[in-house]
Image (tube, rainbow over all chains, first blue to last red; front, side, top):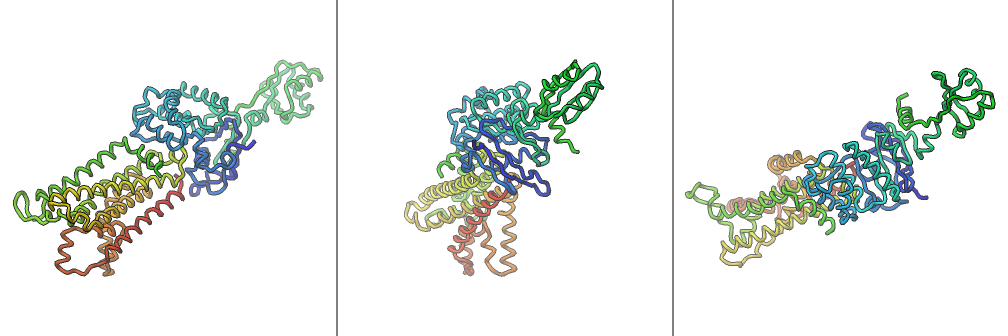
Length: 297
Length: 266
């Protein structure tokens, strides 16, 4: 299937600072695609390029298999960096401009304002809004007229915990309805809970990119314990498919090939006469992974 | 085209600054001229005494050149308005949002250019209506209404020149206060220094061809015209030359503004 967005070898620099280095990503249709990276890693720069407000030094991108970019943007609801609205206009009137430019959703304004909880304040001027309300309006504007794709840059900025949970639920719900959602964040939790795919950026380099399951499963660990830790360790050293063995506090940690399951480990130990007192599959959390990847080594 | 203008209208129709500056322009221009025509504001004397030079220019066809000259000063209101409206987009970052929402960069630019053209047309139309009223009152009839009508066209050109310059400065500078400051400094002081220097040191009238000056030359101070005629001063450049140069500057603003917008990050 043709990806919704295909990014090819994009580079971008601001003077001497290289913000993106030869980044290529495909965003599959129907995915929740998380772009993850510490502050200043190039997330917003990349979204700015694919939304045409920044100009890449080299490389290209294609929306919907090659639709003209402005037509593509009219089918994408976007929130880039900050909520950008006319300060002297109300939420309702700001959305009229959004709808006029994107040619969708003029009659959809009340619905989205209710959805983001601004219905009661929709006639107040934007400049009277709190940070969280501005962010909500920006999300509302992105949802206007049911776009096919959402591009959300740090969507939970400035929201309270309830607001963050609401947005997470909203993303799940919209994705179930078939929307493709591209979401950039430095909050691992946010990405881990909702994303199907993830790309990790660090100082403009794409470190890793793929479905969350694959990316995370590939480095799972299996933890085992037995009465005799030393014997256990010796036995397991003979098992094929085990890449690394660590021992800590009488617990043996195994880094295995992706094909190795806890069942196989258990069977192997029993066949060698060792009964396990503890067996645990530890999925490496995104946070651990993220720290490992983005730590300076 | 109308789509772009309709969206610009959505942006400004509820903007109080737009209405205040427009209203001040609409009220102050006729009020000022009414006071001059009646000798309330005058050169040569004060109060109810003294001789007046300024109030002689309100019958057809002199009213066009006279109102055009005052209009060239009052157009500053509208120029500042153009700067505020344009730099607001950068301040609010709505320039980015317009693109993100689906405009091409050139659509953003063309919408502003169209706004400048429409504003120029509206102020010219207003000047024409005012000229009609003043001319009718001080001539006693409409005879000669269309004599020197070309000066109304010159005013349109002058408006395009000033508002186009204001738009260009805004796109170039992006920051509201600095853009307004530079616009006023340039139009009131810097251009006069440049013009004086060029005309003095090179002993040519080329200083008259500077961006705003070229269109100012189309509508000179009426008294100055009379003085020049009396002194039989040598004419400098023809009105046609000034008109073409003013059009040329408008094209320069357009293409320079376009280049800035297409080349840079937003």
